[in-house]
Image (tube, rainbow, N blue to C red; front, side):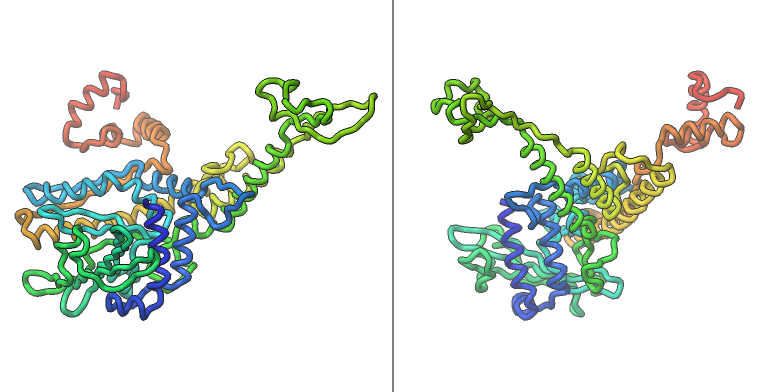
Length: 469
């Protein structure tokens, strides 16, 4: 179902990128080039293990999905965040925020693979629901001088019988305020937008307003959109003017194609060198009774004639060139690791080639720096998301006013070995360089003042610390 939806969206977006088409549909220009849409389409196919270079002779390693999964894991592996404070406002905000956090690992993977992701909160009865909109399901229409997306059109598709219903939800910052428009269309062709239709044509859309403007109670207009674009923090080499992010695999697409082809050569090498016995037609009965049970695959009947003294059987068992083929694949994987900001050995064989300590350190630092940048971008997006949740809460009076604070803890597991760090700090305590309370506070995650005295006594009794200090 999801695959069919994505296929339709790509077809419709190609039509939308004719600027006059979308301008007539929602009254807004398209802030994306055809080159960017082609790139998003390629990244989507790669992520779904359906790259365009697949054919009957080429298999895929699924590298795009593997890279996105690993990067997303590194970004969120030790992540913890919450909305702190007191009162019903904090509890209400935390409920919606907790839902996003529960899906953050998988949604970060989509963002990493496609260059970005949109969090789109909306009112659903007396609660705030949140949609995760992938890069191939929304169309940016405006952005500010900082390159932040401020306007967009979101696409929703429903099939009823032979008819396809499309809803375009437009979000625009205007002089009048934050304007939201809903327009429905009907078509009997999957790849066409069709003609205008009533929102009531689809039960799920019946209660939606065609147009409304949002602002503050004091009459001020919003300065930020009510959707959040989580953008990958990499330079857009596809279209330098585009506000959209690029996939972490954007600079490795060609290398991934070559890796798939090399992998397919390896598969063919093993298949082509499969053990076989070439036998004369006369040596095998047509009914196969002379063949060992279950071993028919081993024998190949050939029209051989070698007389009464010739051997009627020949064994086919050539040598396999696995070492050179795997070495070629491993070198491609190392280049992919470099271009995708992964440390060496993540995809490639870490034992295949000797590396200096400096090379290992630099590759880990490269990965660590990229992950930290993604974490900063994600934190900015989550802060914006909490602001939107707070705005809707006030607008619809869902909870009393109250102050809140959003805390973030990303951990240090990407680069730091906690065990090694503990050993270093313990050595500093033993050498009277570091106070014991500093080590205890770090190890147990507590304040140096609160609970330190009883914790210190207990630790000394257990031999955790040298009592001389």
